[in-house]
Length: 218
Image (cartoon, rainbow, N blue to C red; front, top):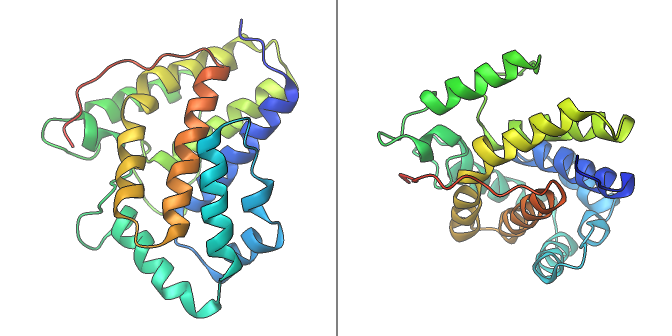
């Protein structure tokens, strides 16, 4: 049984929720206002990670110079990284990395669907989206962390979270986030990619998970 403090789970859950919203949806003036009003850059838990501190400074610098006229530039950056209309530079779906033909909704997606069905994990999407989108993983992670906050002895929630991390997310997600950092044209998404990488490393350490080594095709 993994033993992690409630405070650490609360920190990780807050990050998972923020990353879920930030990576699933196009940025809006409202979402950027939230980042600024709540001083997200400086409030982000560093947990003693120097890479987090560097990313926080990058994010803080971007937000301190924010003007509403930058929203279109930010939307374009999100689109070219994660959405389209041409092939996204940092495709956010796991099967693209795990499938030799780089297909969406391939065998790895089916396996994830079976896992979610087995343990009653379901969510309603505003628009059709493969369930192995990196942001949807973060949403599920936030929910499972919430269950562990409510009941630290919840062995099923702990086990499912470990399976998701070890088998379904961590084998490919660092590649996606590395590409996002590499191809981002704004410091906002460069910083978010770095913070997401650090979050995944911290979560894996907290849950004592070593990702399966899988061949990546992208």
